[in-house]
Length: 281
Image (cartoon, rainbow, N blue to C red; front, side):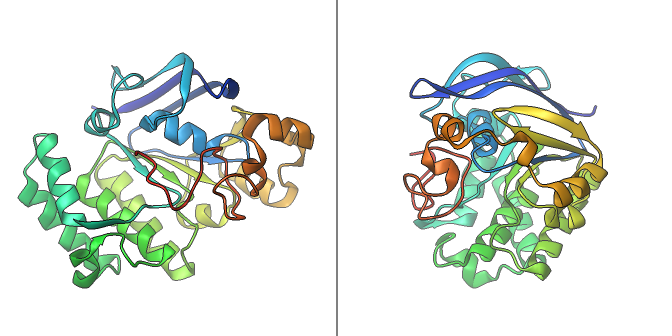
């Protein structure tokens, strides 16, 4: 049976400010959906709301995987239901190895931890993650690109039903992006993985071929099309969907412009974004 991730009428707020304004989205297993849009539009917020990050108030709607309602479940139960989040800023955890994390995840899900850890080491070599990397704490002392490779290793070893990849392309060079994208593409074909790839730029989609492209702005999906839509956006940009600056501030704070709390000057869609913080603390 092909799995199905279905989001209907999803609305969510932060501190009384509505960021998601009625998101409708359906992804079937094996499909790659690209979610593209300007900074401050709410793309990363959508990923965090679906994964259950604290601090967001869901005010309406539903999100299900194969009929299982995710909203209201703790993050670990959403992961057990088959959802994986590749974070925009993968966190570092000193003293806890990647293998420890995956073994615990497998045990919680009723899978064989030894089998998952075996897959971890097999996948690592192919994705440029060494035994030395895996012997450290999770993502510890890794470059941005190495962290994204390590996230992809975890994805491949855990074999979830759906993966939300929040700016997978950031931090990766051309070769790294090609290697990681091909592994994700392979998972869609061999394991029926459904993917929601969040990105600003079409360069990711030259490697990870999308079945569907969505333009996300002002907290909703504004337009949907095929791969040709991504090519069009590369030429035209997002100007037609960007509201005046006062609206951007009201939706996402100055963080939406890359100058808000914890952004360190980095553009972000998430008003809580802090690249140095544990997103599930």
